[in-house]
Length: 126
Image (tube, rainbow, N blue to C red; front, side):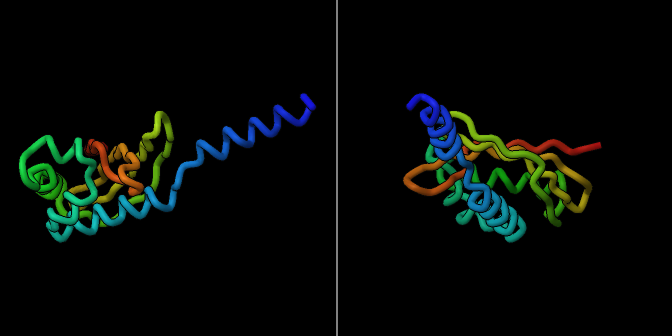
């Protein structure tokens, strides 16, 4: 009995820690589409309640407009890394903007059955 218990436990742990990569990727794609359209209401809907509370109204979403000011329009990107820890997905994104490459880091969390953006960081790459 012990022989099969360890492999079953490993499979169970692996199944429980599966990251929904397509959903995470889709959220990042929707974010960038809304960013290029300056659709702050759409971005606001993608944020967790905690992220929305940082500024009143859709102020948090509007703050993402600074990305366009700093980097220009979003042109494309690709997944650079993905981890899942403590119920949060950390997604590293290698983005291309008009003014050059940017490393983006999204922290995503499931809120009410929907994957949402909890935090975001951007850093221009040399």
